[in-house]
Image (cartoon, rainbow, N blue to C red):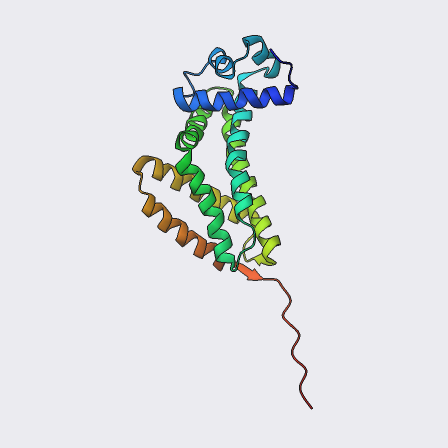
Length: 209
């Protein structure tokens, strides 16, 4: 087996864990099955992760990183703020529709962490990460567009995290893409209405003599 830096090996095992858990479910996924999915020995797994909690935290962070990367690329400044916000939501939603099992796994991870004694902090960490992710995205939009908010960033971030979390689960259950798109349109309008322009007004033209 080729030698690999620990950080790279952890990433390999985390991605393997995501595939195995999305396919088989969290309770039925074992360290042995993850090692097999990654094509490494069990001893390599235990060298990289000293506990199941450490693995699950890495899984949560990596899934969030998957869609954060595409959303950050999508919310480059566009003609209007509303178009910029909607593009970010669309990038997230495209990821949901392309990787439904991965997003379904996020809900299973939450329930597993809440039910498993000693793992409750992982569910809190998961949802704190969602809020932090949206705060980062909101600040990116405001900086790129030269705008400010009428509400505190943490409040809007928590609202967006709760909205997308509920909408994603609703879509996974009902499969109504048109209804989801209509809700994202409405939320984009709402978010655009919470923003004010911080760019300085142009200087008035001098009066002609």
